[in-house]
Image (cartoon, rainbow, N blue to C red):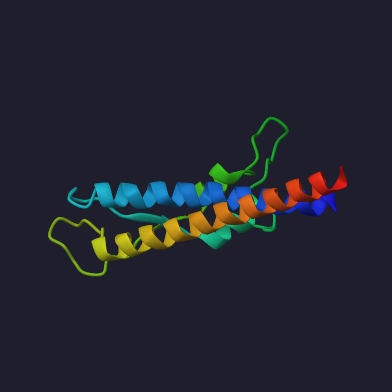
Length: 136
């Protein structure tokens, strides 16, 4: 029972961390909307979450090849491994690929999902506390 609770909280903690990293990427894109030559970035969130939670195996999962090497585990490396360049929706003379409408929509969507993950974690913790108090 405890393992299920911890794995659930760990999963949502990883998701929260990745959502935070994605929000930083989107904010960076918005901040550089007028920078000539800037190429917008985003992340493949589902693939990064699978890697961060250890559900991805095989060639796409990073591993330590020698005893002294650092493996690719963790949220930061999962986010970095799944960064993608945004495809421009229209050509610009300054070669900037930031589409403000897309970035605003991504920012709002990611914010809502971040908040939902926080609420889910709070609900899990509240349920555990209620269960502990009921045992007394």
